[in-house]
Amino acid sequence: MYNGGKIIIGLLIFIGLVSFPFLYSGGKATAKPDPKIDTPEILSMPEKERKCVESKAFMKKEHMQLLNDWRDWVVRDGNTVYTNAEGKTFNMSLQNTCMKCHSNKAKFCDECHNYTAVKPYCWDCHLAPKEKKS
Image (cartoon, rainbow, N blue to C red; front, side, top):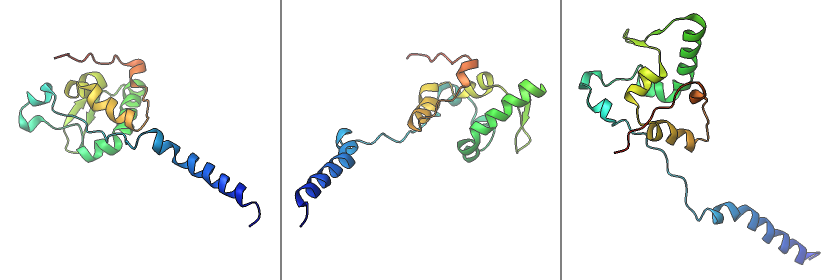
């Protein structure tokens, strides 16, 4: 076998480099986020009114596009009322409509955004909600 020693050393270095991230993290994976919607504000609402502006599936998939649309419609077009698929109207306001229910920014917004390494710029313009310490 030609250069057998060099090949074995090369393989050991390759295996060491490939396995380093797994060994460095200690085998711990980041926990999948579990956004909490059991805020006191939501729980104080009547059961029938505990609905978001759109369905849960829609909001999971499209909330960033909806918020971008809202921003454009309010700032550029002056339209401040959103009518959802069921015909119910909402004031297009991140701070007053969304954060009214989702007052737990750290558990609802930040947990998923940190998990996916997304840094939304919502709070560059809006005031981040102050969370109550209990």
